[in-house]
Length: 359
Image (cartoon, rainbow, N blue to C red):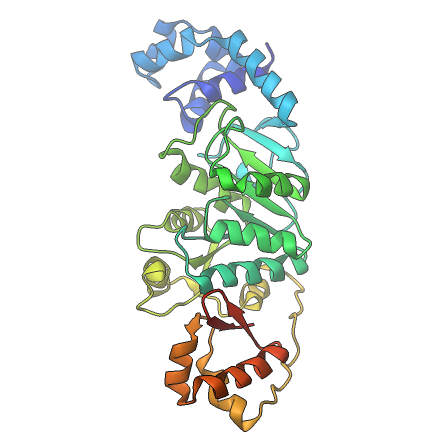
């Protein structure tokens, strides 16, 4: 058994964890020596309790490695340990960093100016649109978007990066033998072709609830900065922001309406001192040396008097046709003609159910 294989085994032992693995390997001299130690020697190290020592000693090492290598080969996954030269340098700086990182995709994308985009699973339309727009702006500036492949903001961030022709990294909270959420299986494959999907968990690890907050430290550690697009008061994105601050990384937040429940947590981050980001350039100016803004001056939008009666009432939040009629004071027939003219100018667009938003 090699040192790398010993780390793979220790990483899969229940109730052990990266921090304790590092302490054990330092105490015994190597991961191999940890596996060679007796139960009494493990307990006498005062680093593990008796139950954990028995888990290490009795773990089915050869059977695990055979199954793990079969899965990795079948799914096109490589395993990096913190002793490998191509292990992400940004992770080596933190004591609670993973000792093993399973990677599906390009292992050379971790140092390509990564920035984390995170937020609520139950996001608003505006939040999803912002995540896509920020992700596209970042990849066009040569950056890599990092997120967690969860529903909502994470999914929109990954999609925006891919739509912008860039790379993105997804950090998942389970092993590669599982797909969570299942509806993102095609997105996961697309990410692995245009970036990387990574996990610290053995391939057979199911998507346990407690794994997802813990994986957030990897999202922030891989990134130059963390951007919270929209987060409710109990969102896991707030955990990512806490990890980023503990790692001395910048945290940026998009401000939102104070009545927006899906942004109560992110607005609180602003109150606590996080940087406000009104557009992607606010972030790029701070973290990308030599960055030039992606815009000069926005062109003047020329609207007729009739169009001016309607356009101000269409915002980034979906508004229904009936509400537009009420706010503009126009009849439905007159309003529909003006809406059509605004759509032809590509300044607004229709959503299902007769809702409208700005482009």
